[in-house]
Image 1: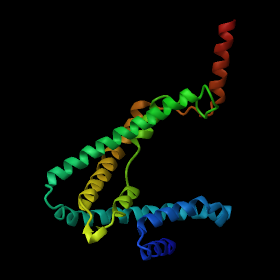
Image 2 (image 1 turned 180 degrees about the horizontal axis):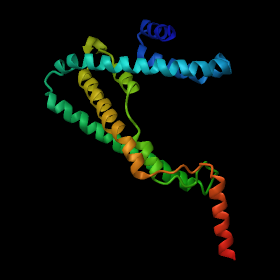
Image 3 (image 1 turned 30 degrees about the vertical axis):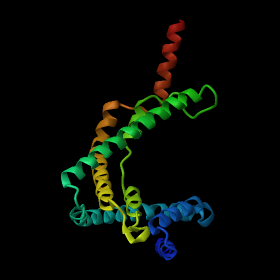
Image 4 (image 1 turned 90 degrees about the horizontal axis):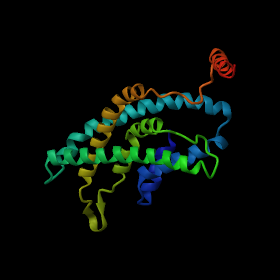
Length: 216
């Protein structure tokens, strides 16, 4: 819990982004956790961090709501309706782009299955579509926006920083509400089946009997 603060202040003391330093440090520690913790410690830590991350995410989104009014008042010459329109357009572009990327990855996997061994030679389109629709934005997007400095060279105010923050808030809100609430409906609508589901003994017996009946 103390490490992120140390990373943040160490980076800020050298005039670097404290937010990006914390994110980078978290990724580094996550990749080396097998060397830092025992298997028992990782199991226990997983339960603790799950609850802690839930609480922290709640606090972050509460802070978003508290900060949003001040961001709106600092949009300057840009009207609120225009800023909302920008946010909705970018949200739509992000959603469509992610879906196209996941569907494209499915096509690429199917093509490469003729050259190399892949986990699933025919991913289909249902699971990639669900994967693409599940691309909700959250804390990481907000951290990236907040990493933008207040001023640039010559002590000039970073242009449109508040607009970028406002658009980020809109993107987070749209993806969480729209995609988050409709994701269960989409999964039920597509009726996705688990390809790796273990077949029951009764189903296996029925298949065997049908095969025997065909050759009888």
